[in-house]
Image (cartoon, rainbow, N blue to C red; front, side, top):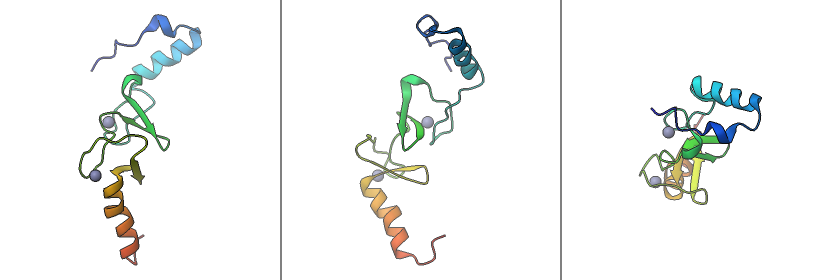
Length: 100
Ligand SMILES: [Zn+2]
Ligand SMILES: [Zn+2]
């Protein structure tokens, strides 16, 4: 864990903002990765569909291929590449008559 790598000097635009940032960091961060559930820091942040991910966690849950914002698919917070989204999510939803 390294909690010391944020640049306090550059963030000190406003005291209020600084305190909020410090508290957020001390409390474990407000943003949790949608895959591993751990705190996400600015340098490793990847947002997709209003969910925050680590850049390293932003990959297909099936084949572990790294995803980009222009080629990912998301179903119920789970990430897929386009191929596996078709195979797993779309196929499942169309073949089965009693999903949900
Ligand atoms: Zn993660
Ligand atoms: Zn895949």
